[in-house]
Image (tube, rainbow, N blue to C red; front, side, top):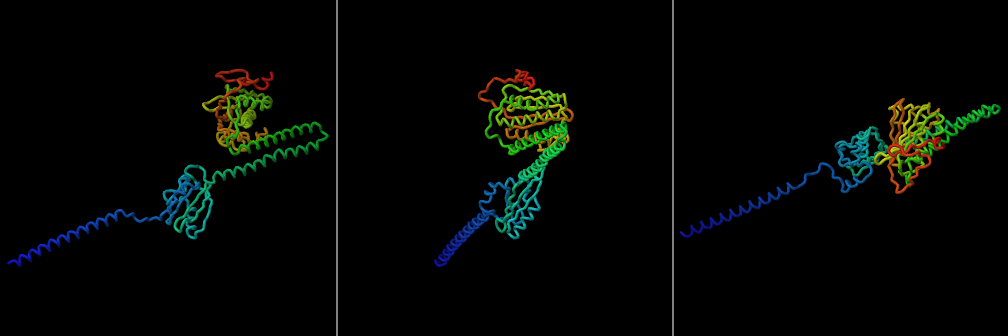
Length: 412
């Protein structure tokens, strides 16, 4: 009777042990599955694109060139901000078939290649002149560097045109002097002819001198850089000197030059350059005005600027030509310019003087109604100045302005 009970008790204990073992086994399996699942969830997906080498992105950010990193599928992996600005990258592709062809050639043989491109930029109405260089970074990654050479090409073009125009303009008076010298030699026995030819020679000589001087002035102003050592300039004195420079021609054409200037107007800059700019504006106004008309020169303060305006009653400028009048050697009326001895450099000098003094020049014109040119320069308040206005100042006008006497009136 005791033996069957012992066997039953052993069987029950084995069952409990077996159940415990199975429970532990199931628990360990559950923990293992949880760990595997957690590891799978935390694992990063495999990259479908080649990884960019460390540091490349930082280098692209500091390059002056527009930089683009192209992957093996011709897709753009990285691109600097200038590359997007000039329109080289659109979405994730190079927006240039020519450049894309170059990338594929470099990927094929590993040889660095360069090319010149002309593309339309979303920020410019004119094509950009670009210089591109493609080099392999690795067997799969291609680096494209693009330099914007538009300004350099434009400067080269301007320089070529400038040299060609100078050569042409210099040939005209020099050739005329040669012909007139031959005419004087042949008319040696005719005093009246000699006097007439000599007068024409003086005119051509004056034209040549003015042209050479303006070329020198323009060459000094090419960079549009601010004046290195500016000095205080009394605007009233500059206006008076510019008016005096054109007084002889104005008297010959019976043109009245009325000049007025507000009190205590000062600017900082190069006195010779400012005088050259004002003299060119007044000279042009007198040259292109009919006899018996009037030229008005005014200077006043406008906020933080001083505005010096020269208005005439001349032939005016067509609206289609206004955008070009500040170009070197450009003339609205070439025939009239030849008759008056104009060089086509005066307004270009005015534009560069304005830029080198931190100012600007504006123009209003209507054919048959005249023109008005306004040179604006930053105002300067000197620490001290002489209150004496000078011998040519008649007195205070309205709103504190001063009427400047003409040279003829000052002599009287």
